[in-house]
Image (cartoon, rainbow, N blue to C red; front, side, top):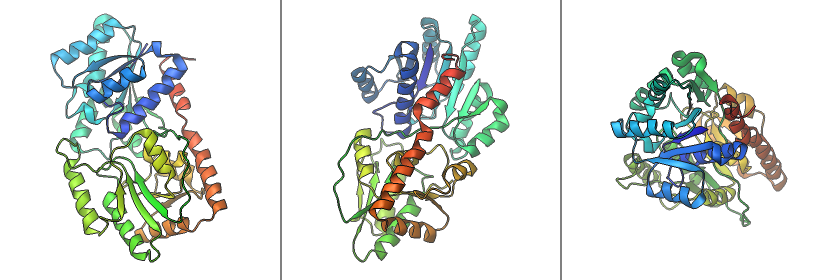
Length: 379
């Protein structure tokens, strides 16, 4: 049996929650839900989602503090179920600023020695180089003690390999948002959008600056701007202070009446709003990598994407495809947006088909199968 650990899970308002669910669903499709146990955080929205959707058998932790009761809970789960491997998604907002998740590989290795078991601990690490200092410190125990560390982004993988060596393995992520049927209305307007979590590193201020310049050039008022996501200044929001700054930037650039901010939307609603988009702008500060779920969501929906220069893996995979423009300076970004805005019906159709075809390289079923083989659950 596989113990699948994730701090965040739908309907928690966090991008990693969606990808954790999609990967779990793909694993269940391969081996059946009776062979997977979910361990996640006990919050009202997560617990309701699990119970209403009958995901799989599950256990819950109220929090992820490094305290005796939580450690006992983990070891009791290992006693109760025939666990042979652990798969952990890391990080995630709901792990909080605590260290239980960080030390789970060590806790389980000590459990193995005490009970003469051989449960492997495997972590899919979503970030490292872009993480803040406290997060990097929290990741170190994982790099020291996990049996395998799966890392999607090339730069992150190269960096953590200096610590974890050959235990670091390549993996991919897929699109978090499934494409749902949607009838998009014909319009002479062109919607430029951003989809995803709004937090530092996503190039939000630069994007707003570019949108301002596009608006100033838009004498025919044909462009609309949309943030498909939440900019929440409520004190309970993890990025409340940063979101306050984002609203200040919106005002500073004179975009208050030009941008629609959807707020949190369900995956189905996100798919429909993505399909109402003609151009995506994703100006990541550290460039395009293969860990960008928002990029893959646009790709799966066939939307032309303007983004920042990618790492070598991204350039090798996406260069030469007309539906993806990796640009350098702001002028190049603006020119790419304007070029996409002038596309005719046939060119848009061709780009859509090519982007959707590219997205098939990131199939969750293939990703899940690779994990299941590594964990000895399928041949």
